[in-house]
Image 1 (cartoon, helix red, strand yellow):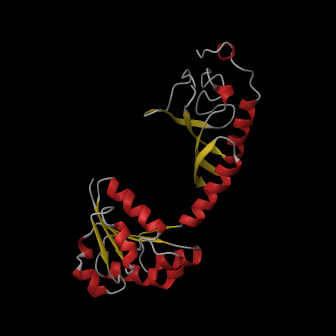
Image 2 (spheres, rainbow, N blue to C red):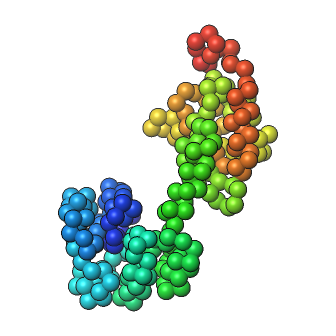
Image 3 (cartoon, rainbow, N blue to C red):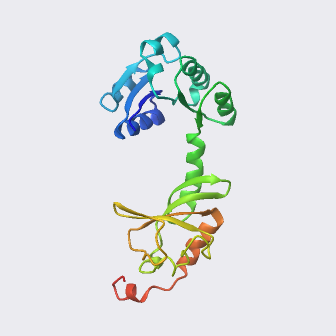
Length: 236
């Protein structure tokens, strides 16, 4: 559903959020008091305006209160401003405000002054880097609860030509304690694939499980002997 979104602060994070929302079909107004940053956003969003977002009168003049969502994307050098702007946005009646926090204290403060959702891009990026950087085959990682997450991974070659069941991923209670949520194959995705679905070169598996079990799954796959068909140069 198309929404009107105001993104305040278009540094690296804010600009990426604004561009992604705009490309997804939403009406996006980007605000920043840096003229150079606003010039860079021209054509990347619906409206790009140089403005002081901490000024309630300015926000009212721009009809920000009529927007569905506001994103306060200011960086770590603007902690006080992000808190003030969050307060002003809620005071003028913006129904949903997402605010960026640099640490837990900042986040707790934002919640207390009315932010509907607080995001921690640096902390989340650090978690992803830890898992993507040190676990073979992992493309992306999303934590769900401590030590448990959803991972996108490229299966090792030893899995090619074998079914999910043959590599120990045959159901919700497979031997590795990992559940396969989907397989992405090119532009096609298979949700909750059957246990006889064959893994092919180029596939990306979306799996859920504990960090330990996912690591064990990859290690176990590396010990599999090459499939007979693969050894002959053909996959089943």
